[in-house]
Structure formats: structure tokens, C-alpha cells
Image: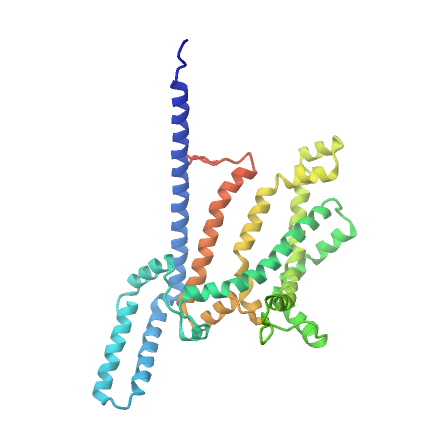
Length: 372
């Protein structure tokens, strides 16, 4: 027997190893680029939120005032000892917070701790939450915002996609013209419609609670608690839905109209294929990358409009937390919200690179970085 040469197999294995190596290089480059982008965004937020160091100066004044008030509560200390104790405690606090260093160095220290989610402690205004650690405060408030805005935005997204796909088949119909006419109503934000919904359905026709997340006192059993939360979600979800649905339908309807006029779609219609099959294979499938992109970025930007709406409905979420933090110049909480958003956005962009390659055969990941 003639032995089978093994060189081709080794050559294929070598090429596979090279592809894996180049793919690893591509992933590493993307991660480094995204981390640098996040660091730049977080650093700019630190500088702006700290007003170039002015907030630290105000914090130093507040520290001295708080320490002085605490020391004065002890009547058994002489004036000289009291002043020495004040100076010593202030110096310890200043050293702990690095307030004795120039702001440029403090800003890089803030950046390091922010990137590690070591955000320290919030101001006194958040002490009612039981834990004044910024990371824990954000984790406690984030689920409420995700529940409210996640439910509303997912409902808006899928309703607008299905309705727009239907309207693209009925271009110029009365319903289509009505959607076009109602699209400008989305210029008003959700909290604007929320005020009217509260006036009508919480006071004139009292069928829904005006605000809050759950009844007071909260129900004991899980089912009653969940039903109470759902009842409190009705008005804010409707407000978000009304403020977004018409412009979303209009945008997707125009998008589907453009793609439904492509040559390959006209060819499919000429072959006599069913309209449902044409929509599924020749309109929806080629447009999956922008649809997935829009959906993921919508989920990441859930709390972008949460600040005012959560105040209107007294919803205890991240928007309310950031509203309080901005009002009190609570820099750690503001930076914490930005860091969480930046990390989620970077992760989404990273995943989209691979989703595009899976959904669209025209797109490929080029490990050698020469494009795609």
C-alpha cells in the first residue's frame, strides 16, 4: 500500500490556527478600541459633573461644616481641643478622598475607580436606601426602570414593526394617511401625555393609581404584589406608548416601502409567490441587521427619557435617582449611571459586529482588519 501523505492535513490545520489567531487579534483590537472610547466618555463626564473641580471645593466646605457640627455636639471638649479635633478629622477625610491633590490627578483617580465600578459612597440624601454604596444604590434602582421602560419599548417596537409591515402593503390607504398625519404627535415627550393621563384616569375617572410602583402598604403575597405593580404600570406604559408609536410606525413603514420596491422583490411578485412569503423572505430577512440594531440600541437607551417621566409618576427607578443626584451635585451617582450605560453600549456594539456576520452573508468579519 502507498502511504497517504499527511502534508495537506497539516497545512489545513495550520491555516485554521492562523485564522483563530487572526480572529483573536481582531477581537482584542475591538475590545481595546471600545475600552478607550468608554474611558474617554467617562472622563469627560467626570470633568463636567465635577465642574472642573468646583464640586470638590464645595465638598471640602461641606466636610468641614459636617465635622464641626458633630464635634460641637460634645460639650466636654475645650475650645482648643475642639478646634484641633476638627482639623484632625477634616485632614483625615481630605486625605481619604484625595482632596489635597490637584484636580487633574484626582480626575484620573476617579476614572480608575469608575472603570472598576468602585464608585464609593453617595451623599447623605441617599441614606434612606439602607446602603450608601453607589453601586448598590444603582443596582437597587435599575430593575424598576428596566421593568417600566423595557415593557413599554418592547411593546412599541414590535407593534410598530408589524403595523408598518402591514401599512407597506396598503400605501395611500386611509389608515396609512392617518399614521402619517399623527406622526408629529410624537414630538411631545411621554411625561407630557402622562400628565393628562393622570388627570383623566386617576382623578376625573379614578380607575388607575396616579403614581408609585406598588400600593401602600405593599401586598404580602407575590401574586397580589405583581398585580399591584402591573396596575401601577398602566398609565406610564400608555404614556410612553402614545409618545413613540406613531413616529416609529412611520419610520419603519418608510423603511419597508423602500425595500419592497427592490428588484428582487418585484421579481418574486412576478413569479407569483405569496405576499406573506415575500414579506418574510425578501423584505424582513434582508432588513434584519438594522432591525436588530434598532432593537438592541433601544434596550440600552431605556432610561434616556426616564428622569422626568419617573418624576411625574413617582416611579422609584434610575431616572428618579439621577434627578436627585443632579439636584444635589452627587457626582458619584451621576458618574455611576454614565458608567453603567457606557459599558452596556460598548457590549452591544461588540455583539453587533458578530450578529451582522451571522444575519447578513454580505458582511464578514475581517480578522486582518482590512475592512469587511
